[in-house]
Image (cartoon, rainbow, N blue to C red; front, side, top):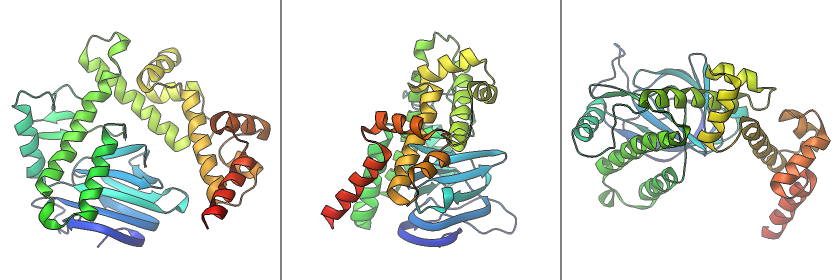
Length: 317
C-alpha cells in the first residue's frame, strides 16, 4: 500500500515502507523498498524515517520547510529520520519512484562498522554530520553521476527479474548505503582544484553551491540572475560563479539554459503547445532567441525537432 494520493502501479515492493504509531515513534521498522509509478502523485503532511529517493521518470517535488527539492533522473534525495514533507509530481505529470527506507539499527550498524574500518567510505568530515552512528544529511539533492547509475540499474534488474531466492536484500540495502556515502566523498573531490585547505570549508562551500543548484532546479523557468543565486548561496557573485563552474563543470547561466532546453524538448514531445507557448512557459521572452539556443543544443529548430519525433513515431507504428 502506498501512503500517497493518486493512482499507483506497484512494480515491486518489499519489507516495510511506512509505519503506524500513535506516539509517532519511528522504531523497530524493517528495511523496505518500493518501485512504483503514479498518476497525480500527491502526499501531504508526510513523515519519513531515514530514506533514499530516486526518480526514474518525471519529477517529484518535495516541499521540506521552506525549500523545494526536485528528484528525477539527474538527482536523488537522502531524507533524514523524522523529516516532515509534502510531495507532488511536477505539473501533475506521471512519475516513477524508487524508494528505500531503512531500519534505524541497520543504519547505525552500517555506520559503526565502516567508521571503525580502514576504509575511507565514511569520513567524519563528509558533507553529512555524523553524530555517533546517526548520519544527518544536508537538505539538498545529490547528483546521479556515472557511478550511481549502474548501481540503480543493477538493483532494479535484481528486484524485477530475479526470484526472491536469488536476491539478498541485506546486501542490496548495504550497497545502497555504500553508494551514497562513496558518492558524498566523490562530490568533495570536485573542490580539490579550488585551493581550499580546510576540509570543513570545502564541505560548507559544497553545501551552499548545492542549495543554489536546487534553487535553480525549482525556479529555472522564472527570471533568476547571478545576484539572486549568490544571495541564496551566501557568497559573493564572483566567488559563487567561479566555484559553481569549477564544482559542477558548467556556469549557472548555462545550467539554467540546459534545464530550459530539456523542458522544451519534453513539452514539444508530450504537449500540443505551439513554439511560442513553449518559449513562454520555459522563461524565454523572445522566440527567436529561444529558437537559436534550442538549435544550438539539438541541431534542429523546435518545429523540426517535433516533426522528427512525429516521423519516428509514424515509422515505429
